[in-house]
Amino acid sequence: MNPQVLRRFIFLMIILIVFGGLSVLVFGQFFQQEPGDYNTRRGDQLLSAGDYDEALRQFDLALEEMPDHRGALMGRALVFIQTERYEDALGELDYLINFLNRNLEADDATGRGALAAAYANRGTIRDRMGQYQEALDDYVKALSTDAKVVEGPGVIHKILYDSDRVSTVRDRAIYLHEQLQLPEEERVLRIPELDARQRMHKP
Image (cartoon, rainbow, N blue to C red; front, side, top):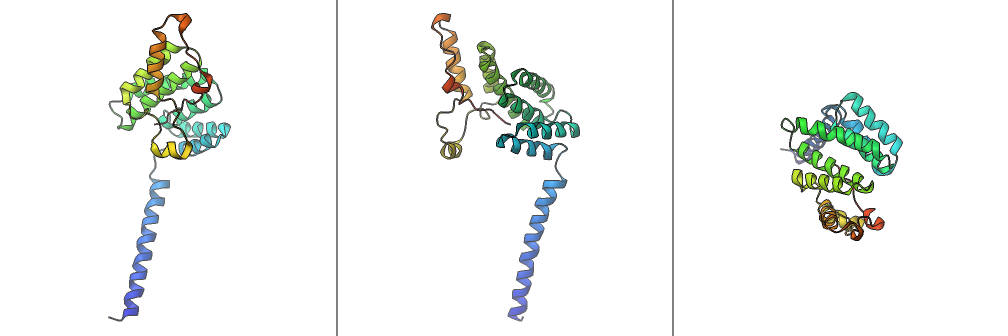
């Protein structure tokens, strides 16, 4: 066989394989996603960028397309937490926790992670509102539901963001438990510079 023809054939095959792979990725990304997923991903990007109004709008669009979309419900709660609308965040998380508890048996494995994250986030809000026993109860529920999801940032995240000092759910739960055993006048339940390092959890 002519070497030039063989090279041309191999070159064409490589182009077809690359084009086919990209087509599968694009098709999967845009045409095989679940209703509400696109707007939820967009909302999550905007939330990370600090554009809370537009993030909330995207999560609302996702919920119009798919009522009870757990990612969109969690996204709305995180917007409310970041903007210190704690009562709205509690309402959103209460609804999400009840929904997930009702549907956990029929859900895939990520439903358990979403439930743990919802408990952890609700605990953080209650912590900030001074409801320490309720916060501790939520932290314990988060850890007993899926401790891995709420264990804190991994090694890569710590290196990139210098987050060694992030307070994990387990750390905070142990601290609250110890403090709540002390006489009320001896308790130190709020240390603002440390409390500010509590991270929000996403499933």
